[in-house]
Length: 343
Image (cartoon, rainbow, N blue to C red):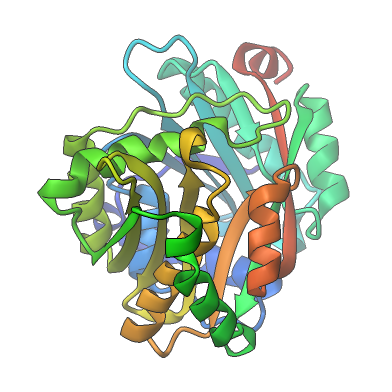
């Protein structure tokens, strides 16, 4: 049977299509994370459609005889003038319609549109525990190569040792004398905005293995727009920034909590700039920021984070804190023109 694929407009412009997308997302979530409350509409709308000041989002819906059977979504992020333009593409197919051409139809529609907007690298992250054989066979068919494994870890709040976190925070003056911690929720205060953006450079040398990725250089204007967009989507963002004795940024950590589903919190970037490593700042940041979130949201029961499997430094902190492996996502990547040639 024929599969029809169309690019979607914003949810408000096509409510019926958004309802179909919402149902597909919730069905997939129920398989991937069966114990979680459903992700709220605002969170899914923000995740798929933005607005994100530094990203472009595209969403496609696949239908068979008018019935939604799958979807694809992509986001792009790059610096202006950077010749490398990466598109992250993900597919979701209704289990009843897998291996019937739905994924192929979605790729055939999405790839030319990504080429048309100037992207030149394609990557995808299928979950290793869900339809891994079919997903990896499709990646191989289109010439994508396995580049990296990303571990999704989770910590159950009730199992986190509060005394351990207290010790990590209390030990900070001994390991990092003269360093100080700044914390806030919401839009980044102007007096530390430049320091926060500079601290984001700590992520520039995070292990990527063979995966090619060019981080967008963050500035204070883009940071404020990101903060405002996140807040409008219902996210409360909690941040901790460590400053060196001379006031220079040394490291950062952030956690997101959604107002409509505070039970599951998302750990965002945690990093320490190279010149300041070896002072146990990562432990201080993770512990202090988690304590900030827990004080504001005692209803949080689970915290989720992502790290490259090849990042033993951050993984060791997470394991000591109480995080355990939850899923593995395998990164596949190839030049977009090579993928297009195989359609």
